[in-house]
Amino acid sequence: MASTFATLSMLLCLSLLFMSIDPSFAGHHHKKHHDKHNKSRLKKLCSKTSDSKLCLDFLKSDSRTSSADNRGLFEIAIDLAYTKATDIHKDLNSLYDSSGDYKLKDRYNSCSKNYHDTIRNLDLVKKLFNDRDYKRIEVQISDSVEEIRDCQNQLKNNENDSHDLKKRTKEFELLCDVVKVSAKSLEGKDRDDKDRDDEDDEEDD
Image 1 (tube, helix red, strand yellow):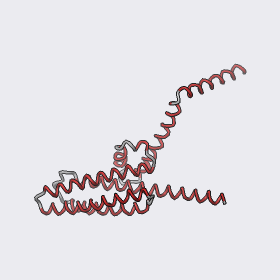
Image 2 (cartoon, helix red, strand yellow):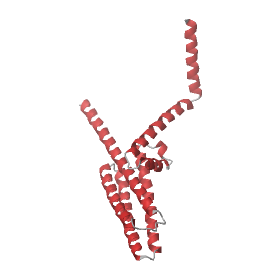
Image 3 (cartoon, one colour):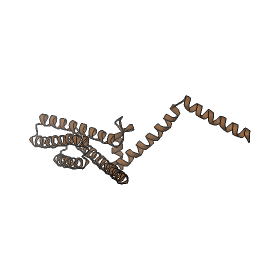
Image 4 (cartoon, one colour):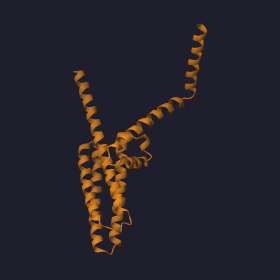
């Protein structure tokens, strides 16, 4: 019996010694758990969008995603949406300048205005995010989607789509959806945190 106890004690000491010599052991375990939690968070977010696979592809294209919390995922989504919108807006202006078809020029000009207003909305969304005004973010994103759908209608019968504008406009609409879902998630989390704080205050009273 004493021999068994001595053996177990020695094994425990060796285990503790190994962990103290190699702190990466605990760090690796923590990182593995953290990565698993982040993947679950990301999957849950994208499952609420109109295209979960494309949502995952977009977010995973950003190196920040692997370590992002809920607010971090929102920032990534809004950055991706903003970049997509500004790129499309720039191409629309270029197509307007180069086209000799007056009907097409009118469509490109109309779409350019849609994207101009959308970019302005996204600038406001960034400010609202810093203010944690998630409810108004949803309103601004809904307005942006309306602008983009108007552009989609303008381009619907455009056979010469050399810049993949229809496809990219749909991708932008998805990114707007990701931003909106993220905002709702953050709004719910803030509400839950406030409720817990209120409960703690009542207990203190």
